[in-house]
Length: 228
Image (cartoon, rainbow, N blue to C red):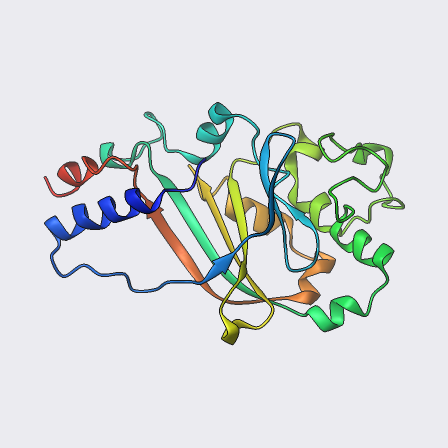
């Protein structure tokens, strides 16, 4: 799912103002993506903890759309089809405490090495075989990716598309902005959060804000359906 261009954002804002003249952005976040690159056909970057982000996203345009975009028959109103449920979280990172650990200990908390390779030696684009490690000797049972990645344990891809950005606002210190899109909150973000209960990484993260939104499709014709 490509990020909207500045022109598309401006066009969307103009369309909204045509219907709601007093509309104005209520909140903005200054963000950056460090080491932005393509890895195994997926946009990837490096997060504030030093680990590659984005390897778990769907790999094709069709898979991205299936995970993130509301489809006909999903029980949503017509104007919502082609849009996506968006979750945003602002998170502060306990960087100094994180850096106190050895690299091998940090890898075990995440469940991957910084370049994305798995702790069982498999490449970053492969699926780990957690069933061969039922006691968590190689990848701890409370490792972030072991709990969060349903594809590795249940054979189905995570039904969401995620992006993480490092905060570029000086007042945020060491922080990140996590954003994800899904066609169903219950099957996407909410399900992942339930799986992450008790993860070791939680000791290094503090959620300081965020919310839930619906992002309509880029075509502003949805406005006509919304206000009809």
